[in-house]
Structures are given as C-alpha cells and as structure tokens.
Amino acid sequence: MKFAQILYDKAHWIFEADKKPEFAPDIFLVDITDKPEIQEGWDYKELKGEFTVPVIPDPVEPPPTVEEMQAQTLLNTEYLVSKSELLGGM
Image (cartoon, rainbow, N blue to C red; front, side, top):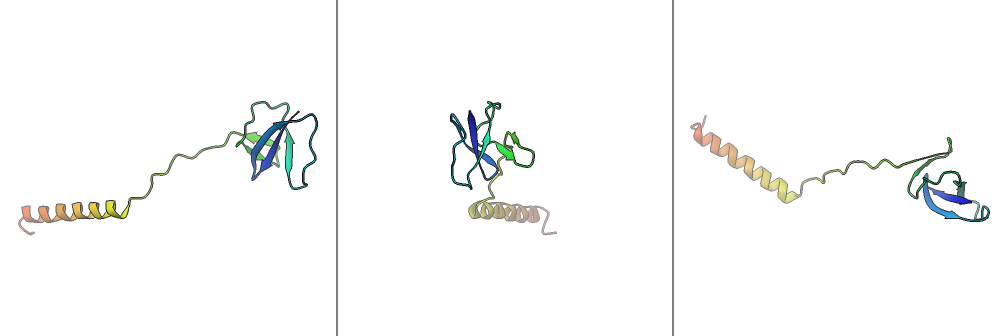
C-alpha cells in the first residue's frame, strides 16, 4: 500500500507500508495506492479528497533598490534640465 501524509493541505511525505500505520492522531494519512502519479508537494483538497498539481506563480520582479531609484531620479532630473536649456527656459 502507498500513503501520503497531508500537512498544510499538501502531500508532505509519501511512503509505502504493508498496512496503514498508527501514528499520533494529528497525523493525517491518505491511501494513494491507486494514484501512482501523486508526488510530494501536490495540493490536497480534503473536502473533495482530490490531489492536484501545485500551481507555481510566475516569479515577481523584486522592487528596485534605493540606489537604482536614485540613479533613475538623477537621469530624469538631468533630462528635464537639458530639455529646459534646449527650449530656452520656457
């Protein structure tokens, strides 16, 4: 038999045993003998008794550093000053 320990709504640990082991009452095990595709890390929906492949969000671009923001501000300021000088101070 094959089992998955569920922790925080995910298949945390997958293992094989001859029978369902008796662990502490707060350890939740699901028999996945007939579901060989399930892997550790898959999501588990207890109400439906279903496993699904986790959806990994696209990476988020980190915010700019203080130095990058300062450099952009300096470039913008230099651009505006140059533009003003070219247009004769209008």
